[in-house]
Image (cartoon, rainbow, N blue to C red; front, top):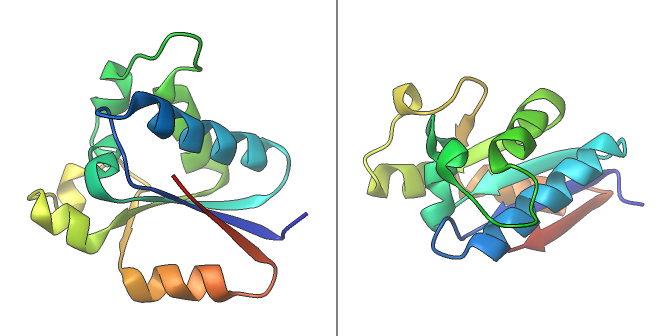
Length: 120
């Protein structure tokens, strides 16, 4: 099992199954004791904004807000700085605990010894 799981999510509400799968896998890994870093990019960026995950509904899926909150408490939730800027989002627009970081930090995380990366 990897020491760290880095998950990059590129889709949001427009691709609900992809979005929910990434959050589910990341939250399950956290609850299994794996260090998890979930990156929100592209349209997934909106899931860092208060209220957006609460609006997300996908039948037979765990509530996205609960999965997000689990990640905020047990892992790292990062919003891509370029993706945020393209959407007019700043640190003041996102949930407490969401980190803003760019490609250099992402590359550092995925290249670390013991890291496994998944992209949704």
